[in-house]
Image 1: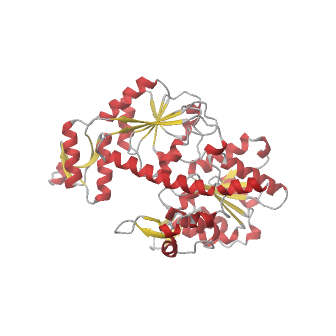
Image 2: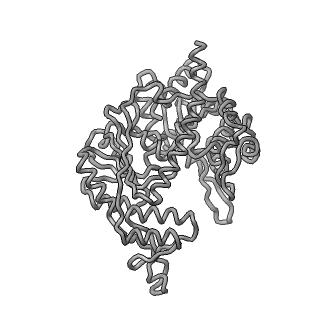
Image 3: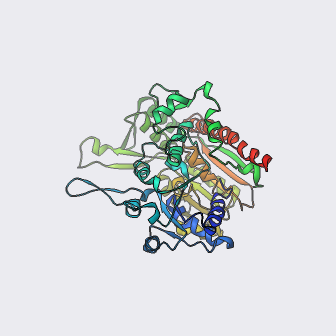
Length: 450
């Protein structure tokens, strides 16, 4: 992450387009990356400025595709397949891929290369968008994938990504066969899988001919990154309520009731309680007073808000504050008049140092955005279980061009689910680091040859 994947691809594309071996490229990327990052990168580098780059989400981009007069066309993942139900009950696709590829011969397309930026977004083998696109993948002769987080959860995340690139040539076309050959379940319901001991290193060995891996720590002199966990104390009465919900899956708070219908919902409710507020059912609704379902945001405590106040006073520097729930964002905006909710229109002001506190959800900022000029401090109010969200968000500041050490602050309540999330992140990060370490051998082998 932050090593310049976009610039590397642009360098290769410029060479191939210039010598006639490539017609052009279709880049599939997260929304903001497709709308801003690729266009900004092309404009930033003098050597690439001749390559016209357009977004297929715009009339200008679609017109350029029809004429074939651009070099790079960008599109977001969400626009691959957009199902809509017609009046007769049939499903109609309103996505862009069908419009530009259906019924077209490869020779009639203005591109022959597809680049999947943030390939890990295609890790779900059941994704309807990716499954829909696979019908058209043979129209492209080159398939490239870019990601800094190839296995955010485990090795099973690799299957769908590699299948998208090679149509099953390496690991087959079915996840079941991949699991049977390399993995074993680690839970009764077979939701989590790990590499079987006798298969250790086999997946990485097969990937060496497919993958070029560069790690930031091996090639860049980025200022150091430190993590500081800020201990937050829950009020005793709140901790009692927390323990009751954890044990019984139901608890009453003021005029609302929190109910977790299963363990998955329970995790979310517990994280909300730790953050200070929770989505709950109105007691009026429960006792059939009034009409309709009423969901309320019930404030439980302000312990993390107080901890954030102390941190802001101590650091006296711009902060990127990362939240998970809407009510977290609203409570932080109310507590800090200087704070602003993230919007892509604010990126310029952030990078110019005009925003002292930017509040964002990781899914809004975690991929492709350059935010290193606006600050070097990140505060996690509620941690995600996803290492992809966690690492990619931290990499918005800890990347090439950062001039100061990056400090990551995590607001944690000891002896609660916060500790579990930290443990999960550390375990998954260790797996991914080991995986990337093995794959980085490929570059060392190439260097020894040249």
